[in-house]
Length: 119
Image (cartoon, rainbow, N blue to C red; front, side, top):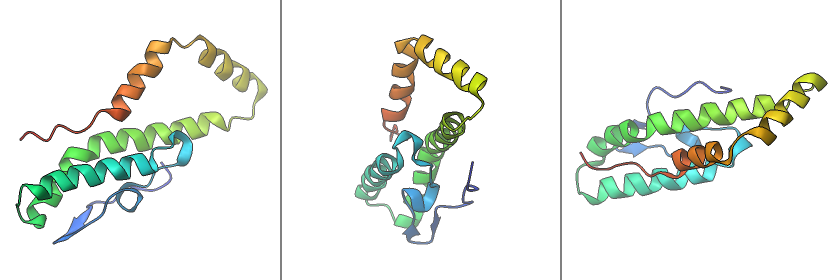
């Protein structure tokens, strides 16, 4: 990835969300989407009336795996999209045409599935 992940998304009662916590390349258009999902998750946790310093570590545990998958996939897509070798570009384009629609739907489901807040 372009940026190393932050070791922590919070300090005390202050927490980071979206690109401030986990910046991503724009290749999937997920920067704002993941910030909105972050806001929803942290809002749901804070509504349970625990102290923010207790909610922020839980928030990070709920979100880090999915966010890291999206950051890494977006980075890989960007690298592949910018290939210049004509043979590699032709191969990439052929694979994209032949990729079953089901693969795209599975990836979309991974991106658009919200965190399970039951704990």
